[in-house]
Image (cartoon, rainbow, N blue to C red; front, side, top):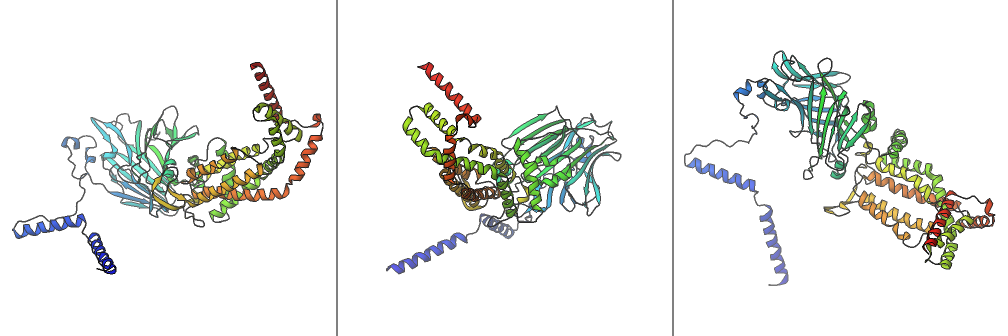
Length: 607
């Protein structure tokens, strides 16, 4: 058999084997065929069979109810069937369930998930909202009882406002109403619990303890960022906001202050429950099931609410995007949910960056262009500090040959003496060795503030620029299919470009400053760390850092045209000729001289 014949036969065998493998019936098809063969054999034998039908979950309907329980207070509410009632306006589609009378699901109609599916904050039986109370000998949990709706649905448009009632009946004149109110647009859902004629039925009816549980769905591309930015926030009646559960599972019990609202916050959306009079006690729990990628976290709140003067328990729900202006327009300081950093960072973002960003958005530019404009404005504001930093580094570079001579003369065996000689040189030359560092340190809070601003910026969600389809998440050019330590399961192109530009910036910065030795290489470590740390962060953030590096190159090029090393050297020589008493002595020099004298005294005592 020649080589070509053998190759042809081999290919035929491969094709046949592949066909058998790919065209083989599935396990379900095999089982179905066996069942049909079994039915045929029974028919031929004259045995009658029951037709096979689709399986229906009738667990709730088939639940056996004790006759005595039906005769207990609210006993009739144990029987019923679960039905969904839809409430809808321009922005929300909400489904109520007759089982528990609660909100079963919430859809924000004008938004989509990262994979273009309807954006549903939560749905299903994992979510609860209700309360328990004692009535006679019975302990009633509203989540387990069937409510009767006042209508089959509710559609509200324009400036209209309408309500629908879910009723839990004790008798025709005694009942608990859940009243849901919806406007024609907006994200607010009014919710009032109204007991009627039950003061002699319900024990301790002056207050209730609400049980609110939610398992928010994954809505964003990055599960990691979605979890990091999902937590419980709370705002007390003293106008103080705080949050927890962003980095780890946690629990908080608060009884010393009233909470005005509780937020189940996700990265770009949130569910808020508000009481104008406040919740007197709050028990809050955040937990995470990392094996469940459909739900981000499990959020729970037990809230004690006191009855109002009219006998009702008035509340409001807000199911809203975490858009600063939208939340701010709702009032109650709901915009505080958007985390803008700690300490001075949040004030920089809140009162400087955010207003400038809002002005730029009015031009209706692409958000990539807006980030560019924002970066240019920042660089212009910081340009005086950048100039001072560059000038100081240039002076140190000019002095380096003289410093090398001192080092060769004194040697490295006596670092104290070496530093003293350096200080004398700085003093004669009128140079501050920290002059290049201080301007950079002053800029750092502003640069770090942007690190918190972009990841929480709702406006970037779903907005593309160049190859980046969504500036609010990472732009992966390679998906590994598995996780690599330090990098993750993908490689972001913009993060890679940012890292390369930072390495180039570090190289040129070393040339300008004249740094040598180990310090020359330490600067290259930080960009590599950033590659791993920021690879999963939004493309918008990495794009900003990339632009900042590019604009810094441009700034340094322009400054270099203005700064002449020969003039600097001549100025330093002139400073050396000045009398000591006419030279301005910096605080740094004075402190360094004092420190050197103290070190000399300590060394003298040791000898």
